[in-house]
Length: 200
Image 1: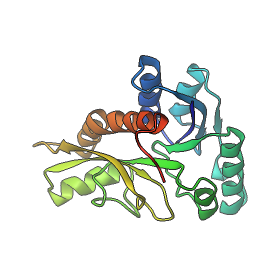
Image 2 (image 1 turned 180 degrees about the horizontal axis):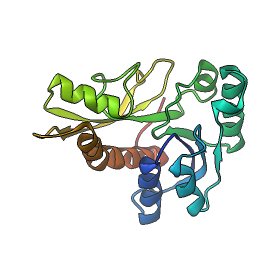
Image 3 (image 1 turned 180 degrees about the vertical axis):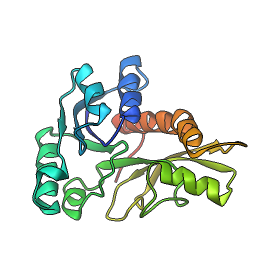
């Protein structure tokens, strides 16, 4: 049984996709042991609680500095004893100490086809704004292993999504989530849980 800890910052739609995947059998051999948010008001915490999953907030606002926050975050992750950590819309750049502790055991979903529109400053709606500004015709999402860089780790799965006439960043964001993110993140977890996708 693959034990996963899911880290989120906002609404938790990718968390919902994982919970739904486990419930309907699209993801097998997997248990969510905990959900962590850096944002007290994240709706994702309610989603988890509604499913009886332990959900906690570790906010940088509650600590004197970033180091204390990172230490608390690492301790909280460790307390769930996960096999892997899933970053599902987690807007915190993990420090080296956490990446090292869970080397080749952290995956992230990013809303573009890496190496395009990724790295510093590319998160949330900003990715889709940049896609539309650049005028590309195809975007998508990527599941990758987290290493020391930002959106730099080994690519595990990608799915393309067409940009359509009249798209706004919000409309494009929704389509990328529905057609790519909510499909490949559960698929990646299921494949990892069943030995079909190796992280190291």
